[in-house]
Length: 337
Ligand SMILES: NC(=O)c1ccc[n+]([C@@H]2O[C@H](COP(=O)([O-])OP(=O)(O)OC[C@H]3O[C@@H](n4cnc5c(N)ncnc54)[C@H](O)[C@@H]3O)[C@@H](O)[C@H]2O)c1
Ligand SMILES: O=C(O)C[C@H](O)C(=O)O
Image (cartoon, rainbow, N blue to C red):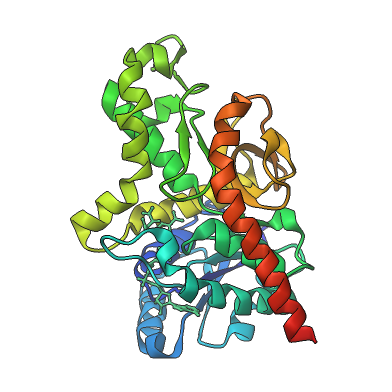
């Protein structure tokens, strides 16, 4: 029997990630080749014509799985009954900026969209925040949409995870599918810690080895590898004069697919999820951990890192985020009062 369609919201759908992402969703890359979808696309008024152009192209592409398209600038209409929300809408950074430099613009967007999701989305809606600063925007969304279960609000660090896999496969000259179990700890920012200490390679017809053994160059792994992954977003901006789009869209599909359909046995992936206190990370903040997924639920993989590494990393970022939450609570009380 044919499955009922799943409603997938993409905000900022007229932008460059949106343009790469919606055809992937309509082709089944995100939810599988037998899952019909209805796409909800939101953008702002100045982008309304471009958004309508994307809708026209989706119709022209005659995707067999695409059962409907809602293209709108009305946030309530966009969020109505959606099962999955991919929050891409926002302002990308330009050359020379850090991701946190776009914070003031993007944070206000996420406050407004949180309440629309809370009011209009399906109660079990799974949310993926892509727009930067991704961890902070997800935290804002969680704070301003208290009725959405916190397990349902995540942010994208899968792009960093995939970048780490890519760097390792290029270095050893094996296919990227033969590398697994890297970990991205922390924020989707240049302070993240890409960790290969539990990663392995399994060459076809070969024996499973640790990445450290296969690369046999700890100096490279401890220095250049880490900074390359941390700075890859900036390198793409420098090269394209635009931030990453096709890789971001593909990573967003990977994130949702694994969350909904499950991670392969013996493999974990990196997701920005709310901390339950694992690895000593402040409970409640959105932090990238290794996770496995089963039956639509993620769980943090335990025992994978020396505490001191994460502790060191976490402190600077947590201070900032915690003070932000405190400010939000004050603002929210002022609104109510
Ligand atoms: N987490 C990641 O791995 C990752 C990777 C790449 C890019 N990003 C971030 O994703 C975001 C989008 O990047 P892009 O290259 O597609 O940017 P873009 O400028 O091409 O597109 C952004 C779109 O969002 C729209 N928009 C702005 N405000 C909106 C609002 N209130 N509601 C709905 N739509 C709104 C814009 O009109 C535009 O069409 C940026 O914040 C970028 O930094 C994150
Ligand atoms: O680096 C950026 O600003 C865009 C995105 O976060 C990326 O990592 O490519």
